[in-house]
Length: 260
Image 1 (spheres, helix red, strand yellow):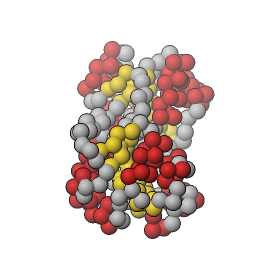
Image 2: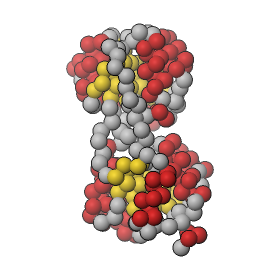
Image 3: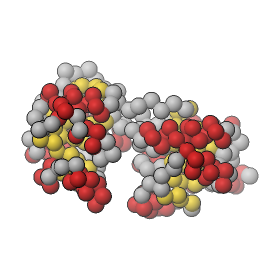
Image 4: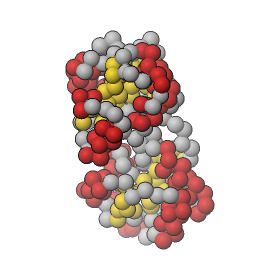
């Protein structure tokens, strides 16, 4: 049995391929909406919630999990750390299904940083109106940095009630919240950056499916500096396509049901 840690478009594609090829799989997601998407993609068994190391170890033993495939967002560091620790404790493989990040060109308007705090410091000196496309998970970490105090922050986040409530609780006014689900085209990003008077854009290098290229192209087209946060290194055996995943599963003697 495979445990797929999901929550991204990549994970749904992996799930669809696992199901079509007959692999037994449990899917872990954190929201009911993500669960709906998992069922639509062919999942038969879906866990909704967050794991601690102890609860994941218990789940692995109870469901007879043979391998964990981590296809969470490149910046979802906590669950990846928990999964690696649980796999080490239960002596099963941890595989990281990692979307390829964008190779950033050398350009004076592109500023590469390693974390949220560094991004805030850099953005704070580059402009007064900062357009954030980093999601909501680490929004508070950005906003609490002294370098962005008093700046006009525009946050583009998912159009979910809880996310919008979080933005409001962090002090953002309705005019500072852009509730929309991407990824977006270069033209749409360009229009939005221009409409809100962005002077600097902050984004994450979350790969092609995350719309990173379109955001960078839109910012450069407008002559705006863009701060790009590189994803953390997660460790584990990294896999970038389904064929390589199947090869690893075969080496671990994990087979589709029809081949058992």
